[in-house]
Image (tube, rainbow, N blue to C red; front, side, top):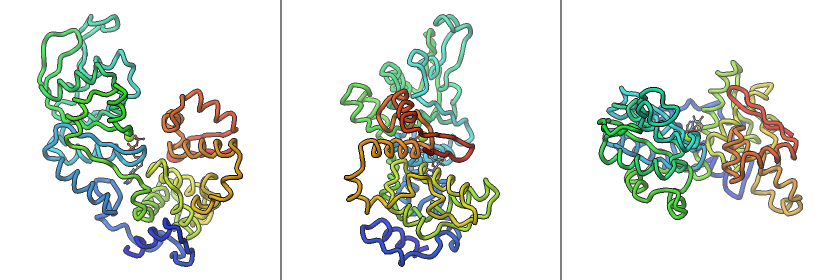
Amino acid sequence: MQGDFNLSLEASGSVMSLTDFDPEVGQTDELCPDSQFEGIVGRSTAMLDIFTRLQRIAPYYRGVLISGETGTGKDLAARALHRLSPASGGRYVVLNCSAVVETLFESELFGHEKGAFTDATRDKAGLFEYADQGTLFLDEIGDMPLASQAKLLRVLQDREVQRVGSLQTRKVDVRVVAATNHDLRDLIAQNRFREDLYYRLSMVEIQMPRLADRVEDLPLLQRYFARRFADVFGKNISGLSRAAHARLSSHSWPGNVRELENVIGHAAMMTRDGLIDVPDLPEYLQNEPEGVRTNTEACETLHDQERMIVIRALAAAGGNQSRAARALQIGRDALRYKVRKYRLRVSRSENAFVVSA
Ligand SMILES: Nc1ncnc2c1ncn2[C@@H]1O[C@H](COP(=O)(O)OP(=O)(O)OP(=O)(O)O)[C@@H](O)[C@H]1O
Ligand SMILES: [Mg+2]
């Protein structure tokens, strides 16, 4: 185990000696049971710290903010909090705030009375009532409209909800976990997020570390996903070649663990002999390691660079174009245009995605 730890640190440094690597990464070690906490894999100091925090917070929290880049495991952390909390016997209800039409937000969260608005043909409980005695996970909280933020704050303070169109208040006992991959302080500065709600939520904040900041977890995660995809595909996968491991170690992982999961899923599908090698990796990872590419990069055309950026964003987002567009801070139509322009084909299968030219 300790050997892997040193191995990956060397791989991420500027001096990279391939001869220092084990011939095959992933064949020997068994996943040590305490490298997983509630389905979250990691044994870096940063992840052990997260595990400790989740365990300490879980019995007591009413509201928690989980922040971190895309693919860092915020969903997993939210589920872990629920499972470890006294509300684990109750429902775990998820609302993705970026997927709700602005006008329906309040009815969705707090419910409505019959006749409160045109389509309100009957009384309806909102998610807070539905999650009573359980947990409500508000994903992408940064996308919640300001008016709903004010009402959410009131529920967190008073622990009661009022259905749209009703004067009656109802007591609810709900733990709220909010997640964001934005810096909410930036949104506050742009008047898109309420400062008082931020302080209320961030009283307990868990910041999921980037994969690039815990590279010592890479070998462990590679093995974990290689095994998982071996099971899923019913294939015998022995591990990664040292060249493939070196290539992965020098990548910057903008899509964090989700990107790694997709890369291993892709490679597990492609490998013929069960040993994942460089040609089995997605195209954008088959080129030279990022660290040694700096000289040639200056020669690349804008066209090539943009194409590679689009491919990386799609890969990081697991082929999900909306997510990739958000990461690139462009609209979905603009991304679709670029996908056509660079003749990329993005196909998603159940457990992996493929992006190819
Ligand atoms: N530490 C980890 N161990 C095992 N799997 C992980 C870990 N972190 C993330 N994953 C896997 O990576 C994928 C993305 O994780 P998750 O959905 O929790 O990320 P997220 O932070 O919520 O991303 P987003 O901001 O895009 O919603 C999932 O399939 C999850 O199971
Ligand atoms: Mg998520």
